[in-house]
Length: 123
Length: 123
DNA sequence: AATTTTAATGGTAATCATTATCATTAAGGG
DNA sequence: CCCTTAATGATAATGATTACCATTAAAATT
Image (cartoon, rainbow over all chains, first blue to last red; front, side, top):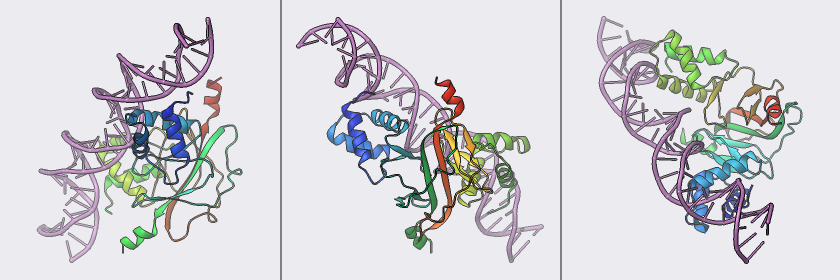
């Protein structure tokens, strides 16, 4: 894997972000530094970095993927009404349930439900 | 929610399936009984049944959603090479990390990595 | 430091799972 | 049996993501 300017920019941005950006949000950020960066380059790097385990891909109910840093593993709560993601700081010992005979690269724990804001809205 | 023939067929199929069918696979099954069922009807019912918590939607790396029954909660292992899902039978007490102040309807625990078959293939 | 190799890029077209639209149908309550 | 309206069937539209290909630039080699 080559250390291109684009790859470093994308990795650095996601690795320091705490707001689970979409590919488009990463693209908008990158354009500030590399004005002609291609959206395809952003997607290619996000995919590669995910499969290398350097960032994490979050599959969302609305089919617009989000990305997260990978230091500080944590579960997520996803509101099924507004789509907001919040980080849960409590960690979990998954060693007991992790399967054997396979090479685990990552895992995800997502709680889904209705956030406080949307509950109030619904009343 | 009305108990249409299509809805009962779809719910019954997913609720008794252990192979995580895609919307297209559900559609193919339903056509055997209701030959002119619309793919849109399958999607509409899968979405509604998911949001009601009667079935579970599994977001896959290749963006083709799969669906699962919801009795017998269990974590999944998803191979990032071939995309195969396997059920993990060990359960997990998530009560300690579940967030408060929100209404949890479901949660998902997915391990990701390379399955045995794909590891052998890679050598 | 010049050359070579080839992975990565930019620009853009293509893909395709999913959703939207709308006229028609059929639950199911009164 | 009607009436309301949620659900359906058929199909067009959407849009996030991927594929393509000529060009560029890492980084290894000379």
